[in-house]
Image (cartoon, rainbow, N blue to C red):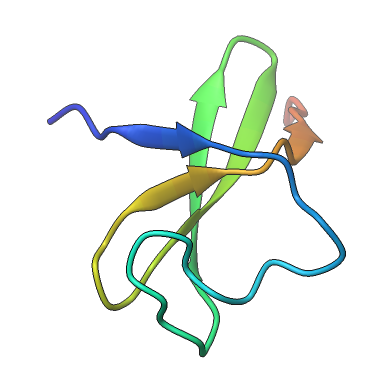
Length: 62
């Protein structure tokens, strides 16, 4: 299932959902793309997914 991802630039804080106004933070989601992992955020109220530009370097075990 393909998820629609909303890209946006983070300001001083990312706590309030820009789609529905939910005020108590987000769940996390990780998505592998090439040699990096995107760290994205899901609103617990409206379930919109947000990419604020956080990336995690992938690592190899072994």
